[in-house]
Length: 365
Ligand SMILES: [Zn+2]
Image 1 (tube, rainbow, N blue to C red):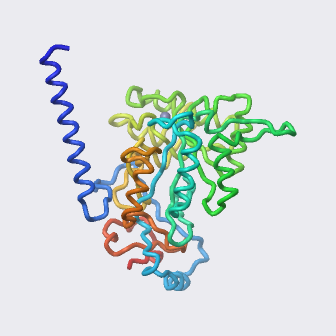
Image 2: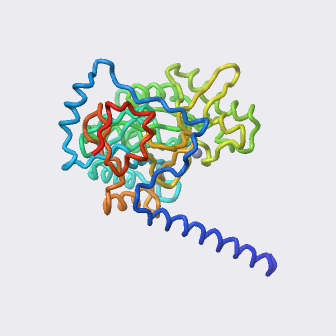
Image 3: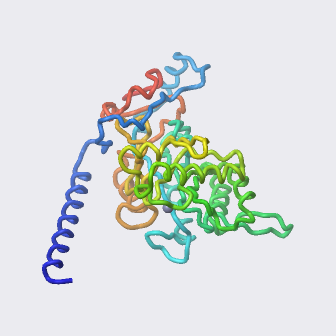
């Protein structure tokens, strides 16, 4: 590289660093809630009101509202929610890997700080059924590593999860702390968990035990480098592969490989399309991300590009965010403890997408 080129590279780096610093400073200097800045409604963001079982009457909703101690709990059911993403469990902590010990420590820290797992289906349907004062989190695992789910045989020769794989660890954690909830979603490619001889058993085990599966494309593809037809193939064929093994498999959410959406008019194909005459439909799609998200009834949320928080200890990773919330928990989602009611502080009301919440369910204080 000659001298002139070096200068140009240096200048580009400076611009990038300053730009990033400027963006972050803006983020942290804001005193109002950090809500999505998008005001246009994307063609992809379809809102459906969060509906209740029909037997609930308006009168009983008022009674339920009376029972919420807003002073004491300070609920904020429009606050931030972390969708945490892990890749592999491995020998050392890196940006991609987490050790078994660190993963267990993450779970314990989350539990002790009042975080409780919810399912992706619950997130999609804004169904937050949690004790008062707790905060929902979602555990997501990308790429279908064998460290997520490894099969071993017990003394009777029956298959069971290895106690040191993600599923084994989550099962054991739930046994010890049942109120943590037992939820995790695995975003898989065609070769999930790398033990094809046990795949059928693994899929049944996951679905029978409350875990979920989501799409991550057949071959971990760059969607911006494919034609519309190819995008539908790498998404649709992956779902069909798993559905053929276990017909209960239905992918309703999507982790974008590399966090990259298809370009231009093809963007919609990340959310819906068809392959070999069989349609697929994702309610939401995830970026790789660096920050928490919100409930889907916040204004302006882009369902095709929802943020996640990477596991780890570095800036903007899980433990860093946990430090931030320990310092100041005011932006965190705090449950009111009453499933039927959505309670939000008055300062946040302007960020609510009123179309997507039934008015009778809303308590603003
Ligand atoms: Zn991936």
